[in-house]
Image (cartoon, rainbow, N blue to C red; front, top):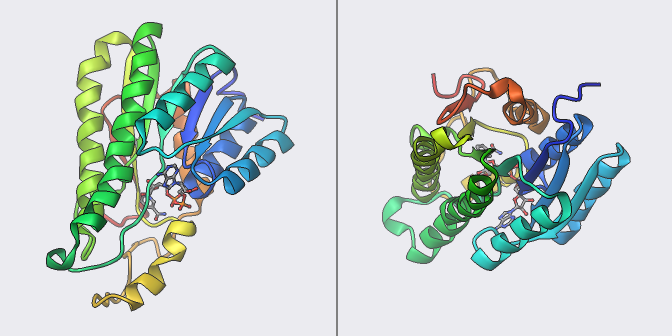
Length: 254
Ligand code: NAD
């Protein structure tokens, strides 16, 4: 068993499902102490149980990442409980319904931006505040291949993820001489609750792609495959990486 994350304190948002949950389970197995964050208490506490089943040390804190008081609260709980934050994995995100740009309501646009972009901004800001005082830390954000190129009928989602790449690069520049690194991962299609909803959403839309998304590798990733990337980034093995927008997409963007 690898102990590459022994002693590291890691916050994970969106820990109740998908990439967040798989990362929690893997990083606990590698010795990390975790602060599991989700707005869904039931699934968040299920992840806590999964982590404890392998003798992992963790707490669960309920939070909506788009609310500043909730973000401040989980950051404070992390410091109170474990005394520091080594890695903040800002991963929570939501998918929008597929719809033409000109029919996208301001409400729908704002909801996606609130969670996917404002949520990442708040998670970064409050983690960085702690990391600046510590003099070290690593922020890992979940972006998407839509941070690099558009996906048809997903303008709000695409814009939110381009924004995540922008925040990642901007912060990487500011904190690189302060001992703090900032990176982002770009999954393509991952078999999670989020993508399970896509076929139905496509059916309800006017958009009928032959294949969505078009992964050249011929299958969705399992969340555990993204967790391996996150666990590597969270380890000291990634020490020379900052401002990187890291693609793990089965060839989607080729
Ligand atoms: P998922 O739906 O399985 O898990 C997301 C988790 O985030 C859920 O537990 C949900 O309750 C939580 N969450 C959602 N909004 C929240 C909020 N406002 N506050 C707190 N928690 C919230 O999805 P996933 O596929 O694991 O997605 C994780 C991240 O990966 C997202 O940012 C998503 O955009 C990104 N991503 C996913 C894919 C994919 O194909 N699944 C591809 C590229 C990027």
